[in-house]
Image 1 (cartoon, one colour):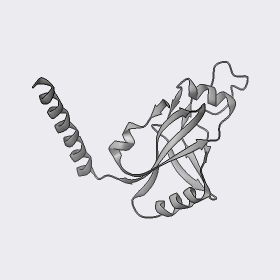
Image 2 (image 1 turned 180 degrees about the vertical axis):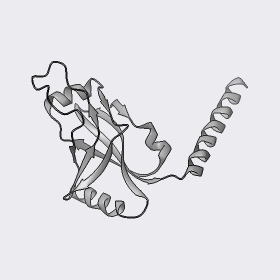
Image 3 (image 1 turned 60 degrees about the vertical axis):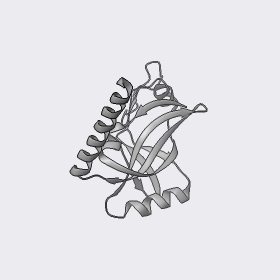
Image 4 (image 1 turned 135 degrees about the horizontal axis):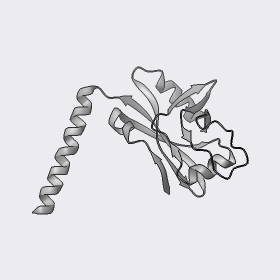
Length: 147
């Protein structure tokens, strides 16, 4: 598994409940560009439309040697999930506070995959608590290392 893009901010802003793996409906030049690591999912989000899941705002830099260079870098791309998973995500998403967020894009067995999660938004005090816990863990690790 080769990590191509990561969304660290999702772990800061949300409580991750369930993770799913999805394929992406891409063009050939987009696959080449993504495998080179020219992709960003920091501003992207996932939503449903007519019983299908789509990722919006994922930026894929156009491949430099592609014949078709006029592809929109932030076009909407369809996610390839099983119908049961889609129905479960849509059902949970309608509950208050839940959303679907992209976590990372990686290459597995030559295929580009997206890890997405069903997440619940954190309040400001939750974010401060998680930062404090991370700092405490870092201090303890340093103290143990020096000891």
